[in-house]
Length: 204
Image (cartoon, rainbow, N blue to C red; front, side):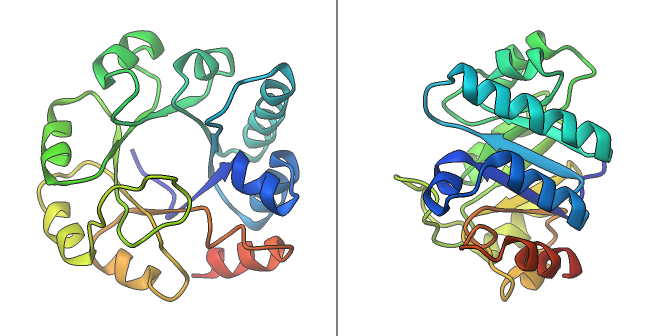
């Protein structure tokens, strides 16, 4: 698959902290040209939260963008969305059994051992990180760094998403190291300037 170069993540905890709804954030990002959005919600899925995800899913469909649900295969199935899972979620093999052969599946890795092990998994793309120190996770994994990103990138032809502490300043080095796409949270949702930030990232 061909991943968009920019992979915005609608992390609900981050959005609540700055007072922006996932629906409003999605509209701004899609208008700016984003062609993939991940909905990441780590807490309880209430009916209201599901309704938000459904509305973002519809907005993505209308914009021709891929909509991704983080962690929850059941929610992804209900919304006909792509699924992204981590090391502590369902295994990629079990997730694939649920979403079927045609569903898009992403898988997070955080070090060389996990990255190499993922080669045998039925994931459409892999994520690697954190590349730099990140504040979007309570207990982040050790930093991977650009050198290891560059080295590990050469081990697989599978699409690779880099994540963790990436900013407008260091993003060019991430692309140069071989990442197909850059996932961002904190560097995008830094306050009320979302429209300007989205335009800056899309220009990059």
